[in-house]
Amino acid sequence: MANFAPDESFPPVTNICHAENVGTLSLFDLTGKTALVTGGNGGIGSGMARGLAEAGADIIIIQIPGEVSTFASDLAAATGRLVDVYDCDLGKSDVIRTTVAQILERDGRQVDILCNCAGITGGFVPILSETDEHRESFKSIIMQSTFYRILFGRHMAERGLGGKIINIASLAAERSLTRFSVYEPIKAAVGQLTNWLSTELAVYNIQVNCLYPGWTHTPLSQKTTENAEVSNKIISGVPAGRWGKPQDFKGVTVFLASSASDYITGARIWVDCGAHSM
Image (cartoon, rainbow, N blue to C red):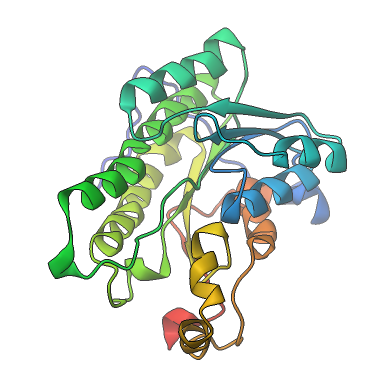
């Protein structure tokens, strides 16, 4: 039988049913919360950040060092929320630790919600043509950012106020897709990482869940969507008959970040309009 005893360094936190005391719509209110979104300037991350801000949360975006984007300022103007941006190379653990220290210690921010969305495209590389450079570049971004989950999980446990962590896997994590080589097993590992974290952190009232996006139109998939033959073939395998959009992630993100999901952890939620069942 599993041992769910907490680390003695961090006190356990009782999980309560907020729905007993407030109305349904109030469960989704994120006013007073702060959400950190890696890769929040574009693609799926931008949809997640927008949904969280529209639900009342302040936003911290982690971006590629030197990235030029007006998304943060536009989001702040549209929602009236505080939206800050930090540069961080998510492929380097020492840089990750420095950035986390800047956020939590230097700037005194408190993070209630963590969305791990940053990533890179799988590149449609056949397995027999896989290279060390491609494999390591992809693996470093996805797996080194595990430090974010651990460091902010520790932060949430130390605060004793619970928290929410949302990971991003992929349709390719559990459905074999041609020419995704290293992308598939690494994304599958994100699902197992979610299982591990959800079990270890539940005693601190921290819920950890994972979204499995399907074919989504983002800057990373732009070339594919512009290729009519390839795009039509992809869409033929999506029951809804369309590409997903970043905005399709707003609602499910707010749900997993709010009190509405306090008794849900370790869940895998497909955001692919049924493509995984084809």
